[in-house]
Image (cartoon, rainbow, N blue to C red; front, side):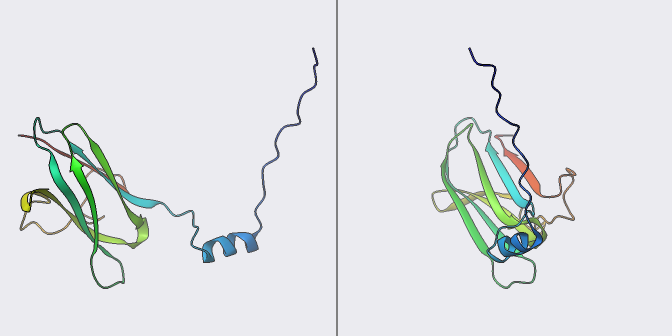
Length: 130
């Protein structure tokens, strides 16, 4: 039996030039804004859960969708770099009918400033029968 041990791994040092190159290629250490949605209904499968969001300093609205979200399932949406997320709404569809919305219709959009959970770049929503 050998008592030979491998040398410990040394941390990899990344030069400033390499960091800048990675940033230019789109790799950053910035946190991404994520939204999770939990279907806590007893018997409603949503044909689609859609997020419509705006990005800081950019025109237009980005649209993301998750399909066939059954009771008990959690789905995740990545809205891009946290600093670039301006606002969003979530729509819940059965067929082509909008059956629920976050925030409720007429209450504007969710923004980082209107959040109450204290998490700067992550939101979690639960939709239930009640």
